[in-house]
Image (cartoon, rainbow, N blue to C red; front, side, top):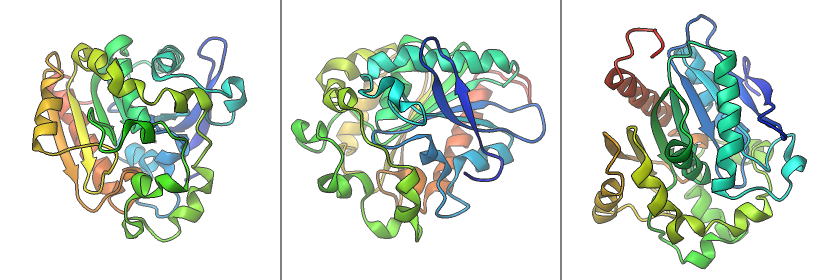
Length: 291
C-alpha cells in the first residue's frame, strides 16, 4: 500500500466488510469519498502502485478528503465469508451498514460522495436509490452505462483473457509496471456476482436510476468498450434520472475502462473531487463545516 493508507474492517452486521482508508493529516475533512471497485478487482484498485500519481487513496487525503475504499462482498481479506459473492441488490445492505458504521465513528466528515467503478458503479447508484447515506452529496460512476456495447451473454462471462481488451483498452494507456503491480489488485469474480451481471440491463437499471435524488456524474473513458456512450445514448441516460437535480456526462481522453489505474487517473480523480466540491456548494455546505 501507499504511505498513509491503512487497512480497516467494519463489522457491518454478521459479516465484516474490509477496505483501505486514507485520511487527511489535518482536521476537519472536507468530505468523505466512499470508493467501490469493479468486478474482478479489490479496494486496492484505488491505490494503484505503478506510479505515485495513480492512487486516489493518497491524492484525496492530500487535498483534505477522507477516502474509504471498500472491498465489496466476496472480495478482500475476508472474501471467504461470502465466497460466492452477492448480487448488486444484495450488496446494498452490508455495504450501506459499513458506511453507516464508519460515519457514526467519525462525525463531521463533511458529507459523502459515492464513487463507483464498473460493477461498483452499479452498486453506488443502487445505494443512492435504496439506502443512501444520511449525508449523501452526489454519485460519481465510471465504466458503467445503461446500454451494452457487447452481446448480453458476453457481459455475464467470468473475467479472462477474452475480456482483456474490454477491461483495459490499449496497453499504452497505463504506466509501465501496471500489470505487474495489478497482481495485488485483481481478484476472482465471485460466482453469484458473475451470474447476475445481466440483471442491470434486464431491469435493475430502470428501477434504480429514477430513484436517485442527488447529483450524478458519469465518466466514460475514450476507449470504453463495454458500454455505448454516443450522443443518443448519453441523452437517454440523462433522461433516465428525472429525480436527480443534476446529471453530468463527461469523457476522459486517453483512458481505458480501468480509469483509476491508467495514466489519466490523476486527471480523473481531480475531476471527481471538483464534482464533489460542486455538490458541496449546491448542498450549501459552508467552508469546512459538515452539512
